[in-house]
View 1 (spheres, each protein chain N blue to C red):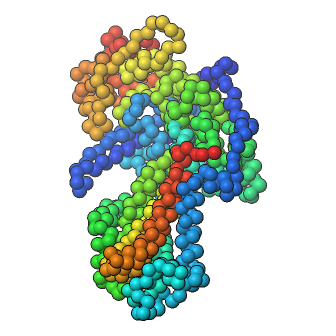
View 2 (view 1 turned 120 degrees about the vertical axis):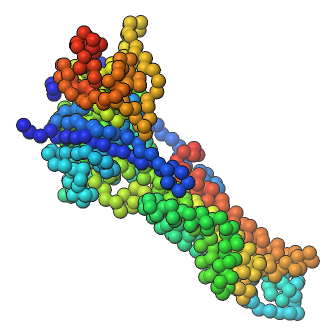
View 3 (view 1 turned 90 degrees about the vertical axis):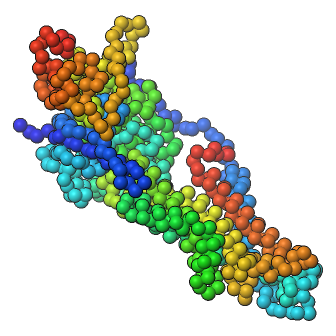
Length: 304
Length: 335
């Protein structure tokens, strides 16, 4: 039976051709090249780095104690002495806005990291342990059916106002989104032929997850993390604005706006400055997220 | 007599599909329902049939990508269908796979070098870094890829080149049997010829056994020693290639062969057009599974399921027609 195979006819055999040298393409290298190829990431990252510098260097940016009261100098308009004016207790709005960057960025980044980790863990379990999937996902659906702000307000009502509790509350409200994303990615990845090939090649379960599933989950997760970061900063501001977030003793963009709200029609600058900074920071993070999404998607055409 | 390399006996794989709000409802898909065949060392068996007939499921059962419902899979005389994951590992090396889609069968985030090194590391086939690198180089050479392919990413290659990488990965484990699951179906014609020739050469050089799953009879005719034809989860005919192509002993094979294009314009040929659609594997017809579409079906076909048994010319065929006197058997004439 073995000898019955037909020999390969000479005219059917086609030698594989692979060019040794690819045609040269002008590629811009270095930082300039990156900015040219990914303008959104570059702009978003620059803006975010500026905000981070403000947060870190707040004491050295010509600020005074952001909590120092001076009743004699209440509600001054912006001037050379008070760049952004003063609020109803005579506190320097410029100093408060600079220090406020710390709260927003801390909350944004902490929530993004914690929600990603929690979501990754829950999503992996859900994607791999089939019997647990139904139970876990129904709980996640339940949590997602409550608006994140309401959920965070409810959680804050259970605890004392502090930045840590704000981070915890927003993380709990946001992580089901990551869990659902990771679960979906895992479910599609585990059906990929290269995962089957790895099983056939003798790779053990934990290594399959580490080598074949996780690296392909990270790209969509990073993008999701930036959106969660932006959303967390807004939720923090809203919580502080309605008095359920950062305690009044710590300046945050949310509670500066809350305190300026009563004077909005006569002294709009108290609300205006923290609002501009919050908007710019959220914009920076969103631009970064959009840019990353495009960069990490291999189907998107690349600019050379 | 020495045992064959692979022996599959009465293999069944049923899937349960859940339906309804709480997963209470459900149905059983009889994807593979009692399949038996053997593959000898250095032999190629082709498994052909239309989409959804269960041929890929057979391949995945042999690879133990999932547990089988019943039956036996023996590799070199040892049952591997009952082994635990740990005990199975030494046998995994001996059966490797090449998949259909060259784009999803390579992890986009691993370099070619790491893709090829994975099985070598897993099965400890290299003792040092230098030996590992040498093996990877050798594999690329075997599949006719340039050496510098090792440090590239899968997306830098064309479909045919990726399929070569997939073949190299299968060879990396030094297997005895390769399951080619529609390995050339996704490639265009010229590339298909290259890969078919490569597989053929490799088989000759390395003495590999192959389970060649395909729906392309022209390529099957070129590649294999024996052919098994599947219909709705069962093998309906199993015969040496030449005998099968010359004189099919099952009405379904006959219809399949009549659909192969003839490379001669204007050549007269008689197509057998089957009526109706393939029945659902959730509710396969009683009796012979092919009776709903068979042009020769008679009373017995509707009631009794034919067994796969020897007929003239070294064929195994599952058809009641062979119990009729030769004069009344429309399949006998061709022999």
